[in-house]
Image 1 (cartoon, rainbow, N blue to C red):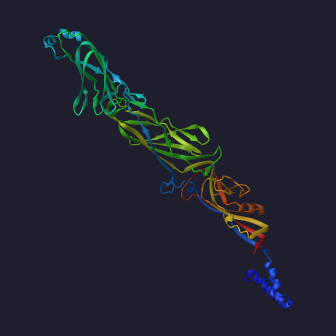
Image 2 (image 1 turned 45 degrees about the vertical axis):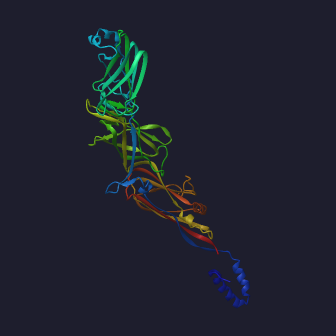
Image 3 (image 1 turned 90 degrees about the horizontal axis):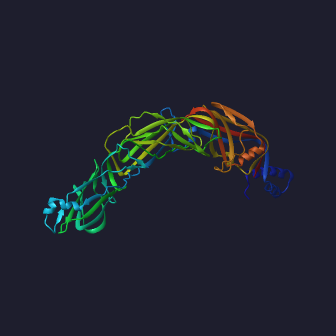
Length: 517
């Protein structure tokens, strides 16, 4: 039989009694085995709560950066977004019908002299096509816009509409010197057309370059088959260009024009362990926002105007707050820097900017190009140096309850005095109060069994505290797995590597302690 230390000590005593009384040793061993606990008066000290809380640890590790040699921290965010410029849409533009009166040919000397049964080339007629208004992202180009040329891609169409009513057979050749591919002007011969006939023909002009300055000139050459009978009748011709968005590039000057803008969403967020009531605030003294403009497939000066400010949405409130943006001069024409002062970021949902986009602002002439893949992209960075003004701002840190992890079912405090003693070392300048709550699940957002009857006010530097708690409260604290350290801040301070609070507390149990054996 194996004996415990306690049984061994009792056995020595019993053995002594055996020598004096001559009792049987086996009876006494049976009594020892029947003892399951021992009560004794004494004292015991146990760690009740302990935490080291640098303010920087309340920030998300992937967003916080050290700003300068003084150790001031900043929240830093970066993002990018695309603003696709809808392609310039070219509406269908067409010519007025050109009418060739065949009767007049009978009076031309050359026609009279021409032999019969051959095609005779009538005098060429020309028509001019002026391009109608161009549309860029639902904005019509201004009157001073000059489109010089358009490089077309498959899908761009030219259509010919012929309405012939004559007693002759004819062939029509359409010549467009301003529509060029590989150095050769566009030419199309249609026919022969006999008698009364309506004739429609479409041609894909992808790969051509259409020169529009100053306009599009179209030559119409009618060749009529001469017979013994006098020529009689008319031939009407009209031409349509349907380019739409089937182009590779447009060159010219687009004039000053304002485009509808897309919103820019700034990636500003606050860690979930910053909390507060409806009147709480976490105002960052100065937030710096930088927007860099990138242009792809677009050669045109672009101005972004942020004077309309921004809109800040807060959680649980669908009505945004207008944010003033203070511009900071920048030497890069495609970069914009501004600041937001006293910006309350507590419970922020999103911050939206609505820039005004203007092409060729203040410019009356120039060379602009836009292609079919034109877009604007923004690189956005936000830096928020953590100089904070707080109002009823709550910061929380959840840690394991050391007392819970050291629960020993074999030891119980039966009765007596429980005295809590502790120290707090505060190196922050906020007016700060501290409370410690308890919970069973790290994410359940419950607050049970406050450590202090009322939150304690922390002074900068080291301080001590001492108070008594009931056995019931002590047992309740032991039963929870987590402790929630809750700081309530008011006033102004910065967040750097030296700003922290250290907390230690222990409980001295002085009374009757019952231990199982």
